[in-house]
Amino acid sequence: MSGICRFYLNQRRRLRDRALLDLAIDSKLRGCDLVRMKIGDLVSGGQIRTRAIVMQQKTARPVQFELLPDPRTSLLAWLERRGTVDNYVFPSRVE
Image (cartoon, rainbow, N blue to C red; front, top):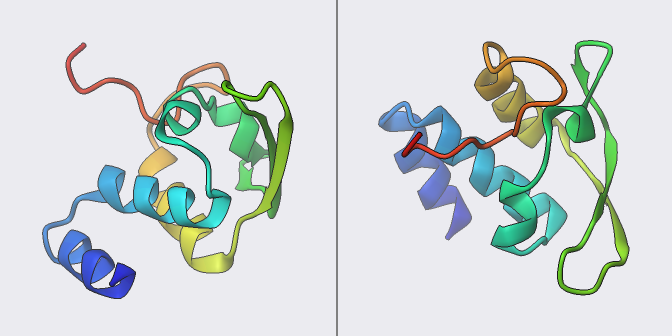
């Protein structure tokens, strides 16, 4: 099922949505935790990390997860022009 979603998002050039889907699948985090992530949580020295740690909002526990090559590629494509390490990975589209 996720392959179909990825294909659709690639065809429509929806970089943000593809990166969000990939990160959600790899991390298994809740949506509220995904949207609170900062670029600095995923990027180090201009490269997407292979592992990241995020504090869960609901449980207040740290969660470590691995970022595989395909999700790192989609995140890098999305984050190329997104700002500094203090910016959110997925800022609101309403701003």
